[in-house]
Length: 142
Image 1 (cartoon, rainbow, N blue to C red):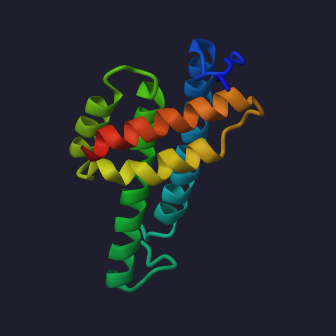
Image 2 (cartoon, rainbow, N blue to C red):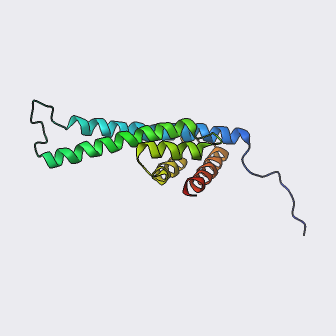
């Protein structure tokens, strides 16, 4: 029996553009959540003249570090959202992660989560987003 071509194939250019846009929105939502967490943690830190809710210096240092980490990761996700569809996205993200003091692999969970949480019901865009993220993950790992 001969294989027939039913016209199915890889996602087209429009699907890839839709996937990049949806991934960008999902990454921006993750960045907003991290930024809110950073702001909330920062609000717990005592000011120079008050004891605040955290009076133990060790705990305050831990909270400050967590706030800083959340803010850095939020900024990195925003940068990822901007360059997700570029042909040199992997190189750009490696440099951005290096500037932030993080390994490029730190972006992978957020990228995969974004591919799973796309704000669209477009099946072809979802497939294209998964392909984009896996290709980007392979490029960042290698």
